[in-house]
Amino acid sequence: MIPAALRRGTALGAVVLSLLTVPAHAATARPAHPAAPAAALPRPDLAGLREVLRTAGRQGAPGATARIDDGGSVLTASVGVADRATKRALADTDRFRVGSITKTFTAVVLLQLADEGKLNLDASVDHYLPGLLPDRRITVRHVLSHRSGLYDYTNDMFARTVPGFEAVRTKVFTYRQLVERSLRHAPTGRPGGAYAYSNTNFVVAGMLVEKLTGRPVATAYQDRIFTPLKLRDTFYVHPGTALPGRYARGYLTPDAPGTALVDATRQTVSWAQSAGAIISSTRDLNTFYSALLRGRLTSVAQLRQMRSWVPAGTGQAYGLGLRRRDLSCGVSVYGHTGAVQGYYSYAFTSADGRRSLAALADTSNNAAVHTTMLRTLESAFCGAPAKSRRQAAVAERPEDAASGAGPAARR
Image (cartoon, rainbow, N blue to C red; front, side, top):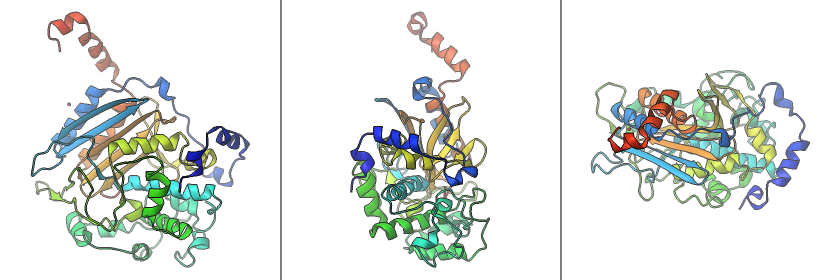
């Protein structure tokens, strides 16, 4: 099924937006945050981007790669290896597990169903999945914005990183089994309260997709997103364990310092499913987020709902399956981060979808690497720091050139 938003132009959507009234939830969710248009963005800092990737390598990532799509031009950078055994170099064309970036895909499907009149974001989850949750006050909107109060079952599952992973590497869970793990714990907050990240929310979201479409989430992703956008590298293979085609292997960092990395590539990712089991590439992720922010996947009205923000940490806000990050240069970017055993991934785009960055480090459970890789956003959207720009300008003078004047396990 091709979403209506992909079959029609955006003019009608613009009219619909102009007729919208302020939604009832506006008192607790902030409206779309203004961001600098892509035309005002400085040139990406490719040298800075390479240095970020090299730093991640020094901190323990076997490899790191990034791709910037900017209005038709493409910039890429890669360091290190995709396979520690064969020493094959990592490339931006390699496929990888995207972890929680999956959450945006799941949210998009539900927003399309809302466009089709099959889902009310402010209806109780119990209306669609009777008896699943003990609190009937939890709405679909609460689930998609991490404000349900549902405990994150992965806190227990991966309290010890490597043993926890090995215990579930080949297991196949049902959605209900995962929800039951969450419900063994008391709620972390009241429905509609503060943001509290929980994978349980997007397990429930996957159940909603399957209930309302009558089909597996894999089919919903394929028919509504992968095929219409011609995503050649994007798959949902659960419960299969293999990544199709050319891919980067993923290496899990053990909790004990100095312990050998664990090859975590082959796994069912059944512990995550609609919360984190998609496989993709940097090219496809840029295509996806650009299309989303340009209004090609939902109506303007539903995209506006997706960008109704609640605070989610310093310089961050969360909408419906979509994260906003506010950068040092005053630019805000939109997308998601992902962490699944062996992979850290990052995919964000500008407010108008013109400039997009996707990046990967082929390790996880390494806080230093994760923090470093977030700096790829600064290089992609803020450009070189003032001092670096002055140095670059000097180096580009003809005389200087002639004289030789001078690279989260669950979120």
